[in-house]
Length: 173
Image 1 (cartoon, one colour):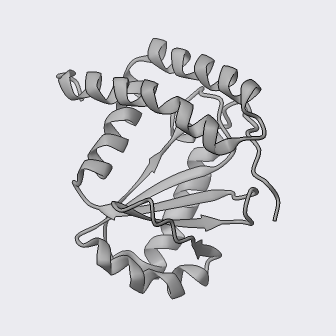
Image 2 (cartoon, one colour):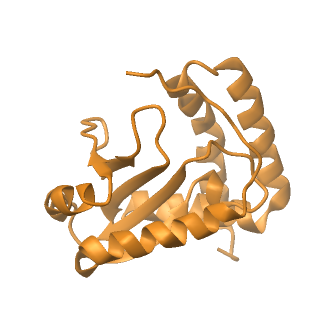
């Protein structure tokens, strides 16, 4: 098993097209159970450097429905990855461990998880200066934690929480 590293790359406008392609495939397999699908994460923010992994969030009415998605999604190369620490979402990966090309996060539509992911994304889209701050933080963390992806992710969390709290007060979001 390859240990995942942190490799940031320049923004790629094809990420939006890749998301749309994956969204159609996911909808084909389980769309009747999904309320909405959103492109989240750094690849959804124009101009932001990112790990080249498309983060996709699918909202369902009841998280227990996600168990029925394992087999259909495996037909389009999404593997369910049990993560007991994630109580508010289910995680699927497309690609090998450490080399994934897409991460699918299934959570309840309009849940805290759903809303906060969208608040963060939308705030960065509306505030390019904050997106630049986030990009700078990510570059610094990627340099310091290149071989420790969990630490990289954990060290971004205080910034993300701060932005979510600001976004909750922003009348434009």
